[in-house]
Image 1 (spheres, rainbow, N blue to C red):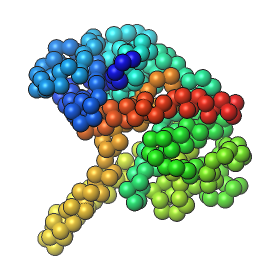
Image 2: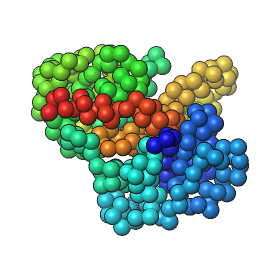
Image 3: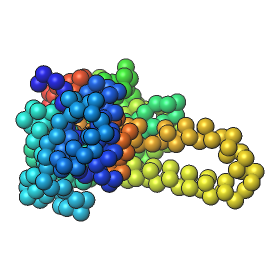
Image 4: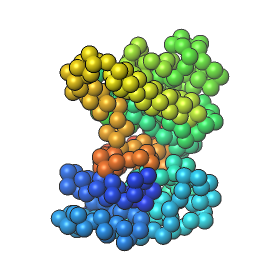
Length: 336
């Protein structure tokens, strides 16, 4: 490929085509990238009228259908051949794009990745890598964020390898600290799964810090950069974090409205509160990479705004530039 083209599923977001096209335009202008927008050609063309200066760096790939949030993922991939997710995945398979981003049905994105792109050599199961903000303007990498609800130690073992590579190459952490999410820090803690992977990770030439607890994800306790868990637990952790953040801000807003003194204090604290909200905002991360598939797949929120789309495209480009998939294959091969 002469140019790095990135496919964007523009049809599946909760808010229509406007934020998807706007985010793609920002990626082209800010980052010098090239984007293929996948979806209804007429709707995309109408939105692109706002951005005549970048038209040479954006292509359109028409898609007749959209996979809904209620569709059964594997069945939808097989039956909706002209859906935006399937078309985007096929662009990657044909090497017309280095990767694709979709804010649509997560299960469908994963199914498309497996059924159309396939797994990387040696990878048992792909995993979702979820970035989580922690104290000090840093980020914790959580794997698996929901791809595999039932996992074996071998899957978590490979998750640790892929998460360590991501933290090192994309986040720039020289010696990422890798830990296993458990119910206590002691080596004997945890269930059969975590104890099994513990003994395996001890043998790796990693900066392995052993078991970590939930609070450590945010930097309040043992220092860790990559937290390994099964997809069932990881997804619950992520949803709990999102719910807790919303609840805290809701409680603050409610109490501030009920007190004149609190309103005054809130005005003084407004820049700080905005900074906290920005750090917790998922749109700053763009999306969650699906690690272990033969291509680049970034899974986004259905509510992704233009900034999230722009950053998801950025993450896709960084993934490609660092040849992350080649590194994953090489590292996995060492320990097969």
